[in-house]
Image (cartoon, rainbow, N blue to C red; front, side, top):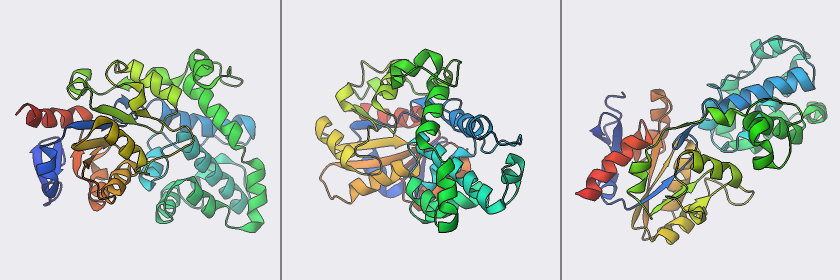
Length: 333
């Protein structure tokens, strides 16, 4: 698919590339840590669509602004993922909505068609976010930097309401109470989570048992539902599932340290799909521990490869299954 990724990488097969300097460790992998979104489950039609729908609903139904323009497509959410710091999709949605609120003030318009066509683009905005270090804090620094506009933007930027609407779209009438503890107020339909698809083979993951675990940007309840859907609840024990519950987050390497200790890892691999996943492994390497971890990125788009190569990714793969098949060959050998 990618042909020659880089001179510094070994083309293990047509779908997996390993950094030459990492190949000896790749052959010794004994422990597996997985992300959920983009690795275990395809969330293109769930979380990504929830960002789009929440943004539209907030401007059209809450703020009552005119215009038919789609302010962000599910595909465009990848711009924020590649900027870094947006493992939490609620926070990504906060940033998108704040971006358009800021444009509204600067363009003196509430017409969604005008806001979509004129002024700064999402691509330019996310490039600036990346330059500042990524995440919602960087987005705020950009949008709220003008003291004249700050108050007007914040008055319309109801993060709690945005989060609620997002959760209602994602979980829907069928899952909202179980996942988040409330019944939907605005969205009276089935949740988008029903559209998630399993994209990893249980049989391949089982081969790492019991040295298999998860680090995810999901909250605990979302992670439980995901593992049940993938039929992995009996393969990955829940004490080895580290979720985003307001404590340590990617790219902090402490989560990887904790799981490595629990699994008695010699050489592990973390399989993710965002810059934060790669940065977490790179941060782990800086600790100088005797246990080792390699980074593996599952590519959403071929053109994303260079972004990860620049940041010293160890392994690139088209799917989680592709890389697990190659690792298993060395385990069996």
